[in-house]
Image: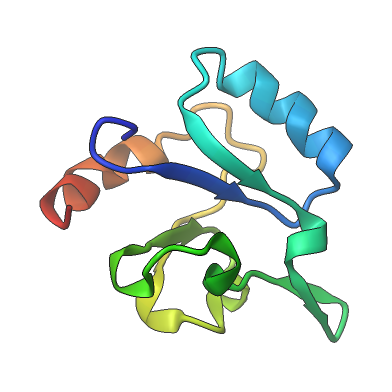
Length: 104
């Protein structure tokens, strides 16, 4: 996806943990920016993600998340994906690739 999109990670995870995970996944340094829990808005014990924190035009911004409430602030920008928990054979992001490439 880095050839078609600027990749920005916005996670509700704590920065130390998120960096550890992302360092394992992004060995080629394809992720442009990383945003963490401190960049979310906490409401009713939930950390909501606000795409305006990314500083990019919302008309050209997509959020892919396994929790729809995470993109409550910009629902028109959200694509809900099924959760990967307890599924070592998960390929949901790969299955989403053709759709993402169509809307570039």
